[in-house]
Image 1 (spheres, rainbow, N blue to C red):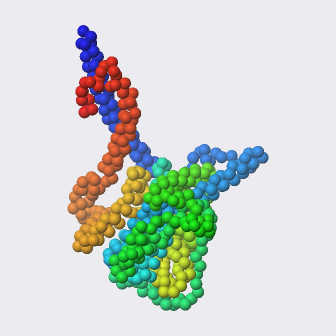
Image 2: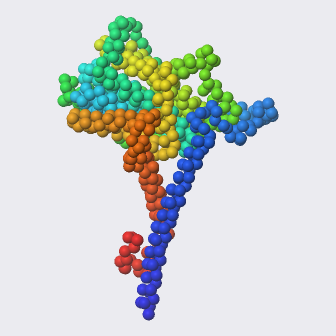
Image 3: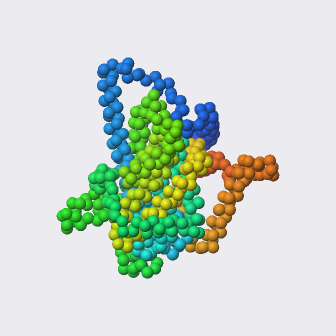
Length: 612
């Protein structure tokens, strides 16, 4: 009788456990359907709000909340309230300056972390000089290396060193410089992810960051084939170089480093000569050195201080000294990303509290309005000059564009104003390199100047082609708005865009370059598809009635080839599955006593319940 009762308790316990498993499965299915319905409802609400509120990129005519408009005027405040307002505003300005300083330092740490982790790989990529004669490969190598070292100045200096050492000629160097111009835009695109929690701000911030990408890619599509066929930049830079040969020298200006270097030098120190030595001594050709190439590959990317020399050791003590490159780079990468996100959050929130109410509306109108009527057409060119001056001042186009990207997301600066500022930033970063080139001496000076002039001509001709004509000016802006709207609807698209544009495409093309026939077939098919898609889009827009009924829309293609909806459903289910697994693992711990009950002796019975 006791044995029968014991077996009955055991059977009931197992049945209860099976029903618990089944209840979890039903809860998961209901939770998944509810969450999908909720997410679609949010997307539909966001689309309806865009249509009802008008253009989300029109920050000047944006309506303010009643809580912002009902702020108490200054004249109606008492003396105590005025003192408190001044004190709080002063404190907020201090917080803004401090967070901006740490934000710029975090960008420097991020660049150092990427150089520690990928600096040697970048040098080895540059050492593949045999494949650099292909302009597309040179372009992709410039993009990839600049992404790895997070600095167009570093990648450009490596290119100049390779040209001066005779590893490559000026022609492949021009395509690599174009790639460096594209790769430097990855920083402000990463910065825009800090505003991903607010869908409306994220739309504008991502569009403001990618307008730089769109402009550079469109310029490359025009000028790279032209340079490969006729070499206009090489010839014009050679003529300019002849006219200024023997003229005065320049001096590199370091306004920003004077402020940030006392802090950043205490944390990390990078030896950039390691990348140059790998690119020089490990290149297949006359400069290959069997002895120095292994030494360069074994050398550390981090500065090594000499403990025996007191003066040298005093100049080079930093936080990560004594650690390996990979360990220091990994820690610094995580810490710099955390610091960047924290500084960006504090900066945005503080600026939002400062720039609110009627003050925000007034500031937006003054920044985004044109000059008086006779000179209204000069407004954009004035902002280009502002971008040039600010980039020369801070010595980095990434720092300048990353600093104003949050302001675009907040609506302080419109996308139409962000575009000329980025154009000026492109020109400003080349002027900085030119000042450094003028300070060089000997044969290196001529080569350095020619590369710097080619970089300058690429950006200046891009401005001449796209900015003066209103129609061409709208092309990069419309493309950036399309990317911003897509990212606001599918937030995972921002990560996919970063990975595809700055990593997958360059790596794939570089890998295909080792088989030149396969490379030609793949690139040819890709370009053919782009041309056909663009042609069909134009025909569908202007003369749809003349097309066959099947080609009047894209519905003849499978849904994954014409919509991001299936991919969004996949990523949504993947995220929910991970979240549900975590919740189930926490809830299953409540039923552990049932399975491990000694009185029931469940360990001695082999019951397969995991399948359920």
